[in-house]
Length: 158
Ligand code: HEC
Image (cartoon, rainbow, N blue to C red; front, side, top):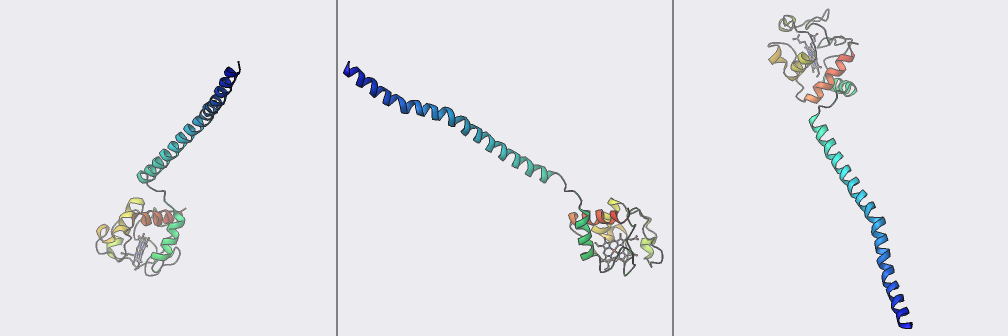
């Protein structure tokens, strides 16, 4: 009797940690698994976001365009005053060489371009390639800057 009690007690003592371990497993493993799948989901969405932002063109930013315009174009252009270059309010959608009173080159006067996204992008990439012998000797090699500047010019036509 005594002996079996001792064995039972020993058995209980041994069984208890095992039971605890089971309970620990039962409680912790799902949490761990959840944490693992959450981490996997986070990693996956970061990868997807990175891929998306790499693949998708960034949206045009007219506020940034205004800032670049003032810095890069402002020495020759202003929206409402012709300087070395013609005033540019309303240029988006306007016919090339048509700001009243500005002395354009014959080349630009005769170019008959309507200033839309495509034409402005070509003009700012390489004025000479679009209109040989024009008078604007300035380029914007960065496509993001061109896109933002064009978005800003568009706001001057609204
Ligand atoms: C060094 C002076 C100078 C700078 C800098 C300059 N431009 Fe010009 N721009 C001119 C001149 C001069 C003309 C007229 C060209 C002609 O008659 O052939 C012109 C013409 C233009 C036209 C055509 C306007 C029309 O009425 O047909 C646009 C659009 C234009 N510039 C945009 C820009 C933008 C945007 C920038 C800045 C990224 C810029 N320019 C920088 C001098 C400049």
